[in-house]
Image 1 (cartoon, rainbow, N blue to C red):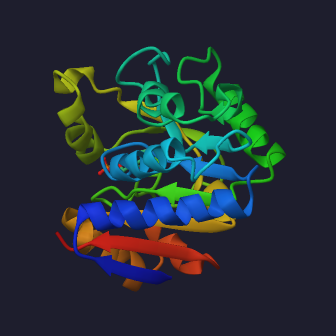
Image 2 (spheres, protein in one colour):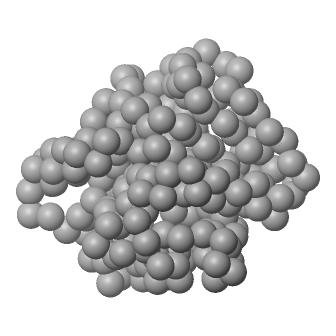
Length: 235
Ligand code: F6R
């Protein structure tokens, strides 16, 4: 795993946007695996700027997101579909039909997980998967568990994840308690992985990169990925 330490969130974001932009330039119809949350916001702003300046063209890009809350429709401002639309998709020239997230309101969630897994496979797996990391080491919503979940699945969110994500909701009771997420096996199929983490994640990044590979720290599996880069901001 390559670890790049940078001085600030701004530098982390600029570097991540450059790496993703490079991927788009090298393969205009690439499949980008995307994440939500605070970590990638600056990265998305960088991509939006580059697109506005005519440096990047998203017209052929396909995107697959890691996860979605169960029970939220795409027009709910707390949903990850809404986050992606407002922070990236509506601000670049991507074809909305080529942007995919799990459906958090599917009637049959098991069928939805199988559908999403098959969809990501049919796209040939992500060329580049962008990841954030939870304080407990989760990637996507793969929480610490006895085993690494392989495929897309529904998951009960850890109490610490609900706490952390409640900052974006009016009341903690409003935070969905379950989500659908790509599995660890799906994430590992990406040709490149780029994990971005702010200074508050230094300790868990250290455990993920240098500690034992264990499903108790889901991100530690990335030690076994052939092309994984971590950008860690010191401030
Ligand atoms: C979100 C996701 C999560 C976040 C993680 C960090 O799509 O997959 O794993 O990346 O919870 O969130 P932030 O960046 O908000 O600290």
